[in-house]
Length: 147
Image 1: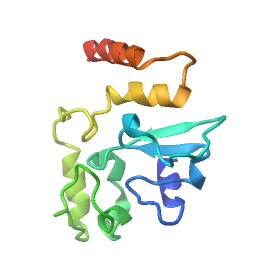
Image 2 (image 1 turned 60 degrees about the vertical axis):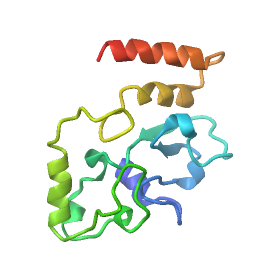
Image 3 (image 1 turned 90 degrees about the horizontal axis):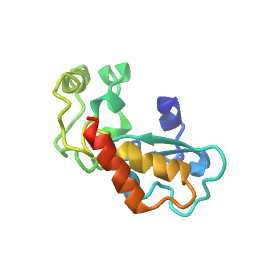
Image 4 (image 1 turned 90 degrees about the vertical axis):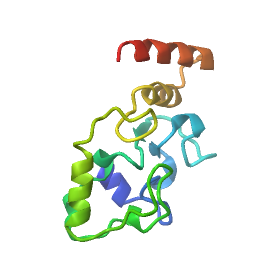
């Protein structure tokens, strides 16, 4: 579903941070602590949040990369992607595929490392009554101990 929401994103919203139908139900974030766009739009009822880093090859690997330049390579690069990245038929697909073989010991906030960000995403998504930043920090400590 992620790819469908991204493909059908609102006009003008970037592929690396898409906005789907004004963010009414589905939203994307690369950092839930920095706010989840679109800011100021109601997010009531059913909510779906996709956490995705611009440097996460799992997010971007697609057979379409073989013959089609993706929008994310024509937009300003994500916060942790080099501006030197270019699309070359076949080559870019294999570069992104090879990135998936790299060790996943990237620091939090990069690549496919979301461990502690799940806590921030969970808190933003569910908005538990009375939940505090201190409780979020405590939960992050518990999660970090188990990994």
